[in-house]
Length: 207
Image: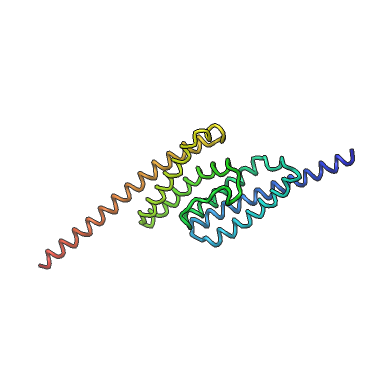
């Protein structure tokens, strides 16, 4: 019995350490997303490297305790990490990173893609505030591209819990973002027309 108790205590210690590491990995990924929006790419990469080291440690632990990988906290950490890596890759390199490149499970990657749509909306709105309609339109295009890819994976809706709900939210975000960009584009066009009219009037007054 003593040996069993020792093993259970060791297991509990490892479990607590895994939980602590996964919470930290999630925090690091969230901060990396914030830095990416601020275009502090070097800082974002540094944080994601720290998170990656925690996942490497998790994989090592899983060799002895494989069931440790199957928990809600671990899933959430993988999703947040995949979301941060994908957003960074899109914003800095204009490409989608694969789940193999960042070594995350396919389910976590797919769910993260759905969440990236929300982050792209945030970037689009930030761009509109800077009167950068072009970047906002690029973000909308990427949002639509991700959504179409998610919709094309019919089996994923049955195999990935929560994907349908996230996709419904994503569709609403896309529609709202399209409306925001349309309004801003019209306002920008009207301002340019007014400026041109003002120049014409001034020239006429001088002649």
